[in-house]
Image (cartoon, rainbow, N blue to C red):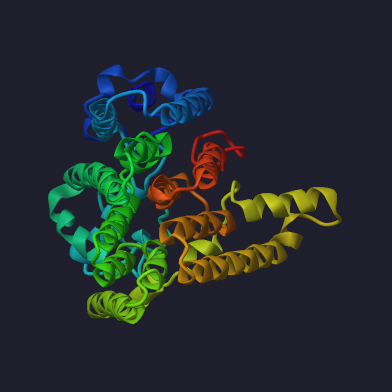
Length: 416
């Protein structure tokens, strides 16, 4: 509750969009309880300490998830989602970038895959958006769905996206519950593992990231697959790439697990991909296909807490030269490791191993190998770790959450 409420203050360092001003619609209905300390130098360290405490308590909660009735967990998950829905957009300006790309196309007639928000510097959303010089890396389906938001104004579009993110996150939890039942397991621990995760609440729900929508479609594909409609499940999972390329990670595992009807599942998944590509071409031309590719432009960027960055930094500290001298070789090694892991998990799936478990390990490898690591990406992994019968994968997911805690928190060079 403190993490949601206290940052809702004018000029808050934890609400990055206050760089463009602190109107009441931005800070939200919890602004009456915001503290002026949120705009001071200790805001970042205190928030980081609160996140660390929340993650530790989360680990205790998921360990003891059998101690309370299911309604207690459902109530806690829903209450926390509502709380972080009402919170200001914490630690990110991406939601305003979504609005900027929508206004680029719908209001100004410019292609968000060839133009950046710099082309609309006079637009009301510009002052709140981040990444002014970046073209859209989001899927064409998501981009087209955001176009109607342009007519709602910045405040209306922002709050509609907040509601959509919270609803999608609760939808993921509900689908994980359903999937656990289909697997013959107690659904409460799986739902708690996803719905109570503090990175999900702070970054994906409060920050209104479209990861919630990507994973909602992916998890819908998993539930469809587990319900016996395997080809349809693979197709739905593949269609998630229309929102963001990362959504397609699970689809190959569902295809391979569809034996002896893997060919039909493959055809369905390919058809879904063709539809997404057709939407991209029809709506935006060939430039939009860059956002559908698995290797997106984000990999040209580097975050300070990605594993390739930290490895190159360590090598630069103990060996001759500096971090940049080792950057490209380190990235190549991580890429090779990712390729081996993906190949190994695909072969294991083909031989009959649990598709969700193998997809979970592959997703973990993607996050470890990525040069651009941000905390809301953990949502890719949470449902898979919750549903896979693998304690090691679950605890490595919690450990990865701990590693990612400093990212995006204003801690100076330590946090980025």
